[in-house]
Length: 121
Image 1 (cartoon, rainbow, N blue to C red):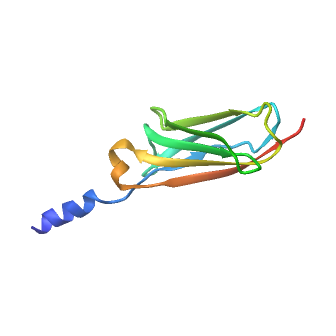
Image 2 (image 1 turned 90 degrees about the vertical axis):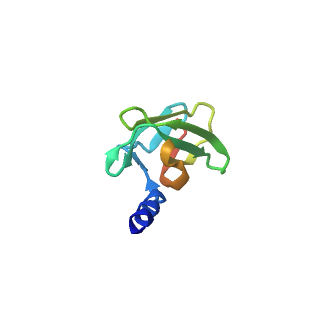
Image 3 (image 1 turned 180 degrees about the vertical axis):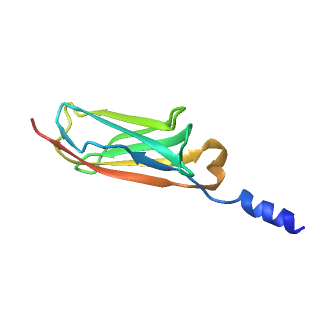
């Protein structure tokens, strides 16, 4: 009976994966494409097929992009956003990890946040 209790407790353990930006550029000029790269770490290893949410807000707080897609087979991701016809100012990018599909029921959502400056040419 004690063994069953220990097994049941482990089945409800929290699973976490963490988005990590790799050498992010934070300064752009209006008209440039914001390109950011990173990986998802799970137990200190790159994790494939982790659903990520990329939310970019404009300087006025309006949402410029709100996209979902998974990390690739190597646990990596890319985010691109064209700043053509966008206002200058400070943008906020939040990348949220929604965990592996099989762990979604016990997921702790981890985030990576980056401020990005977009200036006039």
